Image (cartoon, rainbow over all chains, first blue to last red; front, side, top):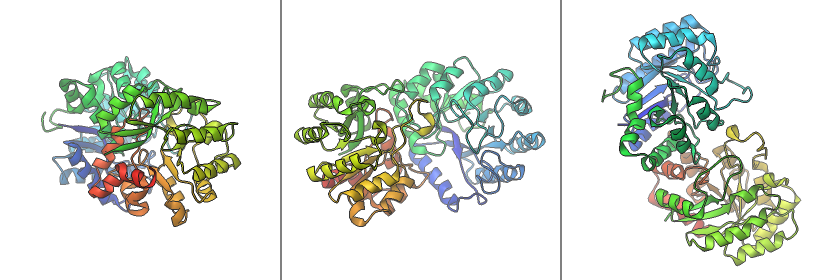
Length: 266
Length: 256
């Protein structure tokens, strides 16, 4: 079993005219890699009618519904995160309730508000209440503001995690840009923050550093936009880890933090 | 047969990278099913006199027949012509130059002289667009990335120059390839190390548009896991001859 904790799909109201092809391509690549379940999110309209990282409530509702529709088409292969923008707390909470009631299995926060902002607390309280993890977009060591997003770094996510010890947080795409060594240093003692290995980065030494910093039990396999890099990391882990450890990274750690019954082997 | 045109030996100055010795590189090649690697000496990219690393490189690869040396040439320093001649004497398949790290204008007069010399000597010139993702570079690592305009200028500057460009993304490759005449385009090869495979269509599109004949297998190891370059080919439905072309045949036909 192999669970991709960081997947994305597109829908008809995104800028991608080839959205069907890209979705099909992801599923095909997943078959080749051996992915059992893609746990995915759709970031609003992906920039078409509101910014990718500042999605409007209307775009989020449409995208979350589109993801649920895709789940219904592929119930054996896709699970969904409810993506919300914490700047509209009422909409975010309602959207989370609607999504989780419909079978979605986690919450996705992009970069609409810093992770340590109090506006995230009611969302995390709901995550604790419903027993779902929070996947948080992170810029590994943000040294300045970047256009188009209010990116958080690991220190800020750890501050949020400390306020919500019952919630499992997933630090997004360690290989997704930025100084991952900074993130790993911040995460060492944050027991409820898990490392998502996804992202286009396939740096030599990154996986060894992950194991050294947080241990095998807090590593989650994922891909994000690039699946070849995810597959490369998986192939390297197959050489690096004992079989029982590899199983934890491939799916058992994920099965522990997502709701019971989210995946076939639960 | 799988040949990696984009491998390094030696330490990286900006972070600890494991597996930088010749033995470790060969072990990684075995892991990823790579038969031969063209290796550059990584520390020298950052040296004031990069050519001083060539002796170490020649000695290191002499002990390992699966490694071929790609020595550095800095055309702004006295003696660079001798380094180019020495590369040919050592059977180097290419020489490398990293002008933005050397503080040279990448399309300036020194580089154009080097392009002409490489063309005359029949030695391909290898250049990297980048070594790391811009988002994660060390705060003091400020050398600009190799611009597309410089690559176009160099390939236009000498009709015999053969260029191998590593770590280029789809946009850069398209900009240069379609900004070149057919003759110029036929003298450039692009490694696949920085191209996105499925579910995105970057590599698949380039195979169709630029052509598999222009692509070569490269990894950027050990800064990057070599498994990534293999995985992106494994995710594509390439014809066997296309895959063979990328993995080794293009080098044998056009760059050997």
